[in-house]
Amino acid sequence: MTQTSRTSAHHHRSSPITAKTERELKLTVAPGFRLPRLPGVSLPRKLVISTYYDTAAYDLAHARITLRHRIERGKKAWQLKIPLGEDRQEIEVAGTQADPPDSLRQLLMLHLGHRKLVPVVTLRVWRTGVLVRDRRRPLAEVVLDNVTVMKDGGVIQRFRELEIEQRQGDEASLRALERQMREAGASDHDGRPKLFRALSLPAPTLAAQPAPNAPIVDHLTWALAQHVRWLLAHDPGTRLGTEPESLHQLRVATRRLRAVLRTARPILLPTWVTTLEQELMWLSELLGPARDLDVQIAHFTEESAELDARDGTLLAPFIAHLRTQREAVQQMVVSELTGVRYVELIRRLQQAAQDPAVVESPLTVRDLARQEFKKLRKAISRLAPSPSDATLHKIRIKSKRARYAAELARSSVGKPASRFLKSARAVQDLLGLHQDALQAERHIRQFLKYSTSVRAGFVAGRMAERQRQRCRNVRKKIKPLFKSLLKRGKKAWE
Image (cartoon, rainbow, N blue to C red):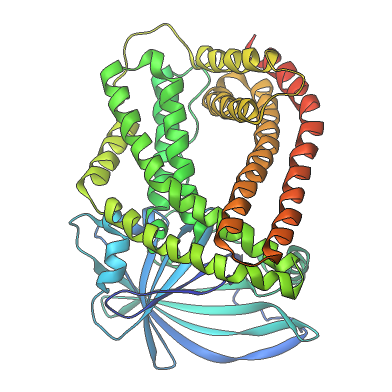
């Protein structure tokens, strides 16, 4: 599925970059497959020629990143596709230059290093399809691609595939289209992008979690590798700065790496883990202001949409002010991510994921998870009938740590650990809503200081009361979740 989000322009010294969020649903089709009749408008048949670039070792492909020069109806552009959570972000730079533009190379600096980009394959794609509509609303594009793979001047492969690209449709309408395509003869796709099929590369897969009886260091390196991979995947999008989710996911990876190292401290060389934790703390603090502004912008944009037109306009200058601040912070973030300190941290994290500095210890991953759960249980048992906001925030932090430790031990403990993880996630999410409401109220006070309008006080009061009600709702719901969390934790770790 492809879902186009807001398209943002990000200016560099070269051509401006535009970006959108992409989600795709692919299906395999036999040579004789034909599209069934669909409500909508037929798309004109077109030829798209894409030359893909990568390193000789396919470093970008292995990182779920593709870079291509695309020619469509005389229009030439460079396109970069990078991970965005479980989806992908498509970035485009218009231009006829023969080599990948510097603006895209800069986004890929961690993935490329000093390695050279070279053309690896060219795909000639004849595309036909239908823009499916529900009355006037475009739901999705259903397209049939006939692909010819060219390498070294010759044809090395041909294949067909079908894609459903979301426009304004919901999940139900897309799944209905998928069922219709399957009834017409389409079947499961192996999930590989066209480039992977063209080069006969296997789809990128996550390493399997170690066996339950594997040494503790195997569990540790597996967890570190997952989070380092996630961090690297969202580095380009964080540098680009058009999608808040990229920076959020990079920060999540940073937080999870810190949690894993904290959990594993008893089996790690103290000087080694301390300096690594300090550098991860630096990175987290670097990203914090940008993330806070992203949350504020999203919050007030949402509030503005819910208010009537007169009151909504009061928020517009403040939102513009926050966006200006965010642009300034983005420049600082990119500067630091280009610096020696960050690059060295990435090198150390990659090394840690392969060869952490462990010490001899009889502890198991279950022991480590048990220790974090005991800290959480102790904190919950000490809660007052009406705990303070600060205390609930501390419980949230401890529930995160217990959850990340449980993920480390899940394969060793099995279903009891999975049930505990589900409860820990529920507690964490609910307390997250509480923390978001507190943050939102602080943002509202900032808005009140910024605005000179008399009516702003009335608007701020309405918004603040909604946040206080959110906090009250969380406090009503949290106690049963605590009880379930402790019960499941006891079964998993004791």
